[in-house]
Image (cartoon, rainbow, N blue to C red):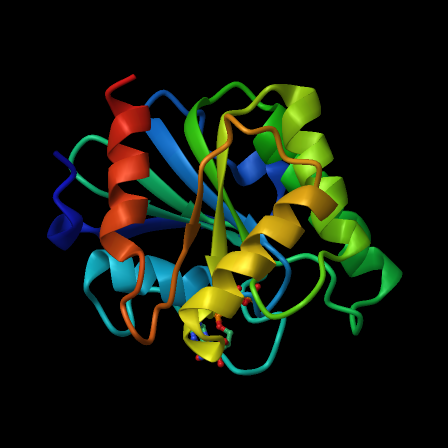
Length: 195
Ligand SMILES: Nc1nc2c(ncn2[C@@H]2O[C@H](COP(=O)(O)OP(=O)(O)OP(=O)(O)O)[C@@H](O)[C@H]2O)c(=O)[nH]1
Ligand SMILES: [Mg+2]
């Protein structure tokens, strides 16, 4: 059982060279800028400010590691933030490739997608990339509090189709503000760690 109350910040990497060599199991969180990655991690950890959150997109610009007892949770910088220059975009690409293509014990990638919008080309690209690399992933549809339960379920189905997600891929509707789906997501994570 993961003890979420034991989460501690351990380190940030701003370049691929700074990434720790992963031997501990890792659960990574990816998604568009502002989709709610950092908020979701705080909710899982039952902590308000351990992971930095901002209403301005592009808050997280480094890969941040949080250690729990036997597993690391990893907050990745969001993609698709328009107001970054080419140099910063290149740094981001190198950092992400360094993370996903490096040797690590990646147990699960939680790919976050905003439930309110159609999938962006970058979301589709991210899913395609995870498929290509063969990383196990699950989808968290975020900000579920913004839609009714029934609308949310319909939209989740649409988004799975838009993203061409295989039936075997788990998806959960979550809300960090309302607490929806958090236990369900914890179960998905637990199942992967015990796999
Ligand atoms: N209504 C609602 N708002 C949310 C939820 N989760 C996050 N937000 C809001 O969305 C904004 C972005 O949240 P973050 O957690 O910082 O998003 P992020 O994906 O880490 O963003 P970057 O670090 O820029 O990549 C903040 O204003 C949050 O308060 C949610 O479940 N419901
Ligand atoms: Mg963030």
